Length: 313
Ligand code: ATP
Image (cartoon, rainbow, N blue to C red; front, top):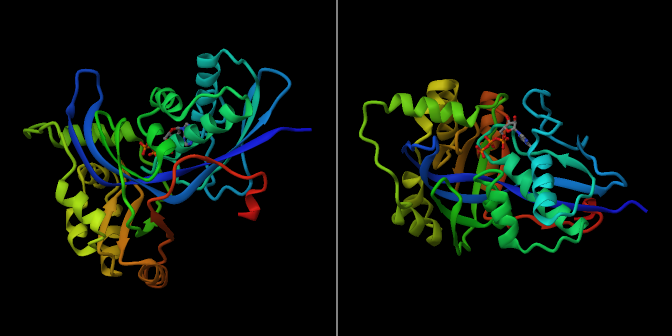
């Protein structure tokens, strides 16, 4: 009998993202507030009788991708995650990894990191390697700064390169309308543009997420929250993709409380008052501007193993 484990991990938006100057190691220190949202990646891990690791894209994927933007070989983060787990545990098993992709590729929503997190959880269960969440997060951090958060989910403050996570006990739901772009933006390219734009500015290393913003989020005070949402990457993403400014204005004209670039973009996140208000924004954007959108909410949980039949969820 084939043995398959399916794990699901969420994409994220950054409600707050401050970026410091480039460091000597080439990275940037950030202060980020991550929110896991209800747009998920699924990775089905199926045991193989040899030691190969193979990747495929499930036909239910809503993100159709060009081969160059979505490697199906060793560069795929799911392969890197499975190899990292094998090396760490010495359990050199083979696996077929089938990804159901829903998070826009290179969209600033950490989709690749969600895939890596789901793979770690699925393979750890499939292979019975028994690593706990902290061990998986340590392994994941080596694959990408956003992997520990995709494992943990919920909401968290991220410092360092985004990997020093402090979970936030957030019980208030926020509703968002996402506007994915038809193209991706490479994260290093957006950081490079930001550095060029700020070449003559005195940029400080961020050390905290605005406590007023955190307070407003915890209180569910959307009117206080909206003007405090912030992302330093916005100007760089807009410089590389000026049409994002047009979509942002359309989102605000459609009634969004605030329109924010997520991470390094180009996905835009529009804050809605509630689910019904989100649906109104979606209708207006679609009817008046033909803009395609997705409705999500947060916080949602981090990587989990799905019951055997995900269709029944
Ligand atoms: P982040 O917000 O974490 O910076 P992102 O959401 O903008 O990332 P991803 O979709 O996670 O971007 O991936 C960026 C690049 O990584 C892609 O352009 C692709 O070449 C490569 N990649 C490798 N594995 C994956 C994967 N499983 N899913 C998506 N991209 C992947």
